Image (tube, rainbow, N blue to C red; front, top):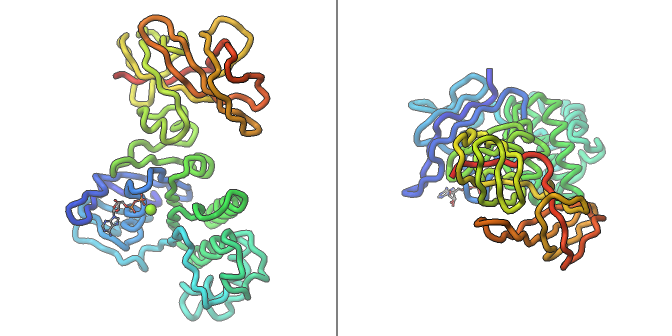
Length: 354
Ligand SMILES: Nc1ncnc2c1ncn2[C@@H]1O[C@H](COP(=O)(O)OP(=O)(O)O)[C@@H](O)[C@H]1O
Ligand SMILES: [Mg+2]
């Protein structure tokens, strides 16, 4: 049995189509990140899974049970789904304890103290916070309370709509950790919507990239980062240098960065020799004293502490023309604007037929 299966879901608002046939399978007990730009339809997808909106066509199956599809609509409260919004939306006039118990039937709310304490512990909060009101909590604490409330009815599926985007960086990392731990402890199947690639790659078991109302690729974080199906997915999941190149048909590509080992994108290898698009990750590019590679002039250096972003002017040989590429170098790399440096590329680069 799978946790959530969305199959061929379309949705338009008036004359504006938003979802064009979304298909996505979330295995039981796993965390799937749905990654896409703002406005691409992520919230619409979650609302359809939750039951707040109906799909125009297509089906949704939750824990083996069809909940939306032709002639069938199960109301949200009967789907066994917890929903966590961006703001958490706690009731401001209720204590933390009352917020957490809010979704439970009356008979379960009696003797709720132990339940509240256990749920707060799950989300890494002190039991003493139970008596406070939301305004007496930090943003991260509020989000954890909202998650505790969503988990209280023990839903099999939890939907999280950009739950960390309003938190500042320090709080965000702690809150993310607590939330992922709580979801795992609850054994819940989770769909986490985000436009933050680091969050998607860092937290999820699988990342689904959403684009133009469809899912462009679903894969494990390492796979989707290394083997994106096309250059666009590649740039959505990480910084990328895209170059024109020529594949020799035997696993080597020549481009402005030299002759490099080529790996096919997941969509398939361009077996034929010919023009290709080349995707290189900035951290694959190095500069050093070792000769052999192409040469470049350092255009700028943006120091970030552990690493530095360095723009390199490449003088490409032949007809490929000059290119500017961005490399991510260790912060202590001794390069300065104006330096003339040899450039090397570590590992294989991904090529796409054009
Ligand atoms: N209830 C609605 N009525 C009309 N248009 C909507 C409605 N909800 C969302 N949209 C539109 O659908 C598109 C996708 O919205 P949304 O699912 O919220 O995207 P995301 O969550 O990825 O930012 C947007 O263009 C948005 O304006
Ligand atoms: Mg949204």
